[in-house]
Length: 421
Ligand code: PLP
Image (cartoon, rainbow, N blue to C red; front, side, top):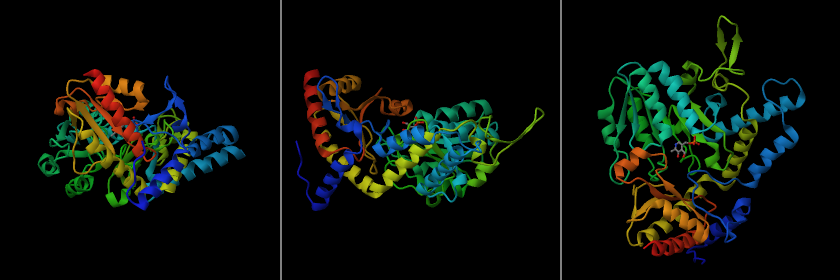
């Protein structure tokens, strides 16, 4: 079913989306028994890749493959040049003042582990405190729990309200002279809440406390300017922003990176090595031991070019239209409850349906109409405990999704519910 779009701008957007979809080969392939195309609503887990990214990676392996930083010969020097150009591209994408503030990591998980181990390891002592929020992904809980356990430090939690909004007015009370770092997500992967990170950063800085922002779910959806935010660390994963897996970015203010010890040891992160002792390279290389993910870095750079060619403001506006379209239609379904109703939300809807298990619903949606949605705790078990559910069903939209796909999803969900009832 095709929906009528109200304005000319909407119609143009719809036309553009059809053109954009042609860049994503997976979206036009038939899948499963039905041989229907995939309706992919699991973009918060990972996104699909446009052919511009696939071609960039394949061209590197076909024509440019060489290691970086070490080779004197031509193609290695060329690969090094492209690699470092990508670092500059990424720095400008997030508004960093220098590419030296961009550290390549495997993803947000590794970035947060790096900061917890390196910054936390050298700044936390017995009785010190780390503050996170009640809606964090395990990637922003466990690394802090581990380092706090080792250092006998305490993990404190900023509470949320029933809508899934961080209670920022309670942050000042949680902060004490023992607070050494605050680490919060920009957007909740399980609820879609957009968190008041500007306020959190301002409050933290008034107490001289650095802030790490987990941008896994924000970088793909809206423009980030780390200097304007004034965050101390910011991280995002390549695979969620239409780039490859195995690559992510940790932004860190120069003053912090320079003071931090290495995270891992090995080749490429050293200055001088003797058996007695070694000295380490300047950041960012100090934190990049071993041969880096070269093709993935180039692929990520191509993904950011692609995102910029559409425009993050256009992406955000369109995805918000998808959210505003799907939300009331879901709310009409008998027994369906949306988990996470924050005023500011990204294009993601988590919900439960009375007496039905999210896994059963997700399996049947897949069989019925090739709709891919996520069922589970979304790596946010403490958040599920807050809502007293073990799991939810989550539909997360990207700019290549359409209103028509949402209609198919809702019709399919209604069929599946009546089957289960
Ligand atoms: N933080 C949030 C909010 C996420 O949604 C995710 C992944 O879903 C992560 C961190 C971890 O990202 P990655 O698995 O790419 O390291």
